[in-house]
Image (cartoon, one colour):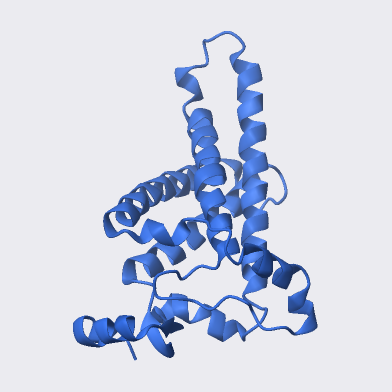
Length: 217
């Protein structure tokens, strides 16, 4: 095995990541405003911005899902128990003792087992829950005449708010982990340039140098 700088995040992945970050931040900011946590925007303005950002994010997610499945990138998010306990122990204990991270990125798997599990839960549980509850709230006029609609709307709003807070917690943890281990810059730059240090087998290194010379340094 040799360690080389390899492009593991494509242009679309980087665009998707930063666009998603900006839209989620906008939704959290306007959502907190709608719930009265701040009054930096007029209520009507907050509603309009929140709605536009939400619909834009849904379109981005739909395109990202299509891209992940057509490119095979979804495989990086398949959870595995191999090394999961070691990584969990590192974040719970070892990181505070100055231990080295037990996981080394591979060309075929850029997320450690805990990351893959977390991202999968985000994509399969939290994101669908926020989509469905948000769209149900937005299009309340289409089902407002059914029996118990008001009570159902209150339940939808509660679910939407609870999931939004869960996503906010995920964002906070995500940003916090960027400050651990290596320097903040070393964690952040791969999502800016696309390149990161990866352990390659001789076959992977030969393939990249021959067929993808622009993806290896």
